[in-house]
Length: 199
Ligand SMILES: [Zn+2]
Image 1 (cartoon, rainbow, N blue to C red):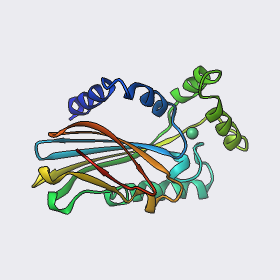
Image 2 (cartoon, rainbow, N blue to C red):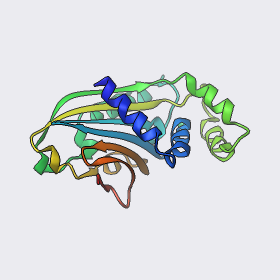
Image 3 (cartoon, helix red, strand yellow):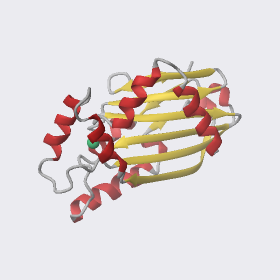
Image 4 (spheres, rainbow, N blue to C red):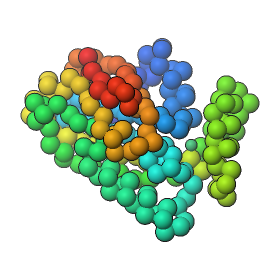
């Protein structure tokens, strides 16, 4: 399965129009989550990466009981893929594997410094403002959720509906990249347009 996801990433990175967007995604924009979706035979796989800001409203390491409870609650919600996305019922998909965890990304600090004087200046300003009250102001923790499904009719996987925006009130957008038998593509799901086509 690891090779499968790698080939998805390689395919998407090969799309010229996607290179710029991929760089932005690595810089992690508040309000923008990413989802990689891949279908191979009867297996469908979804990998969500969401800024902590979108799910719990902070990205520093949870220390208070209240913050720890918020992280635990978000992780519990992510255990159920229906809090993130709904697959067409005709596809007959059953969840076969799930993993949800918090990524405390140490590399992010370096990313930010690299981009500080470049085109991300506006975004950096937001971050400085939002994190100014916290000791750990450079932290940009992300939630990662990984789902495997086994689908009776994978050809019916023609669209994804994001329940994500109902579950997480601060989420604004999900940038989706996908690989199916029909091809490779990218789409953007938003609060106003939470359904994307996989064609
Ligand atoms: Zn952030």
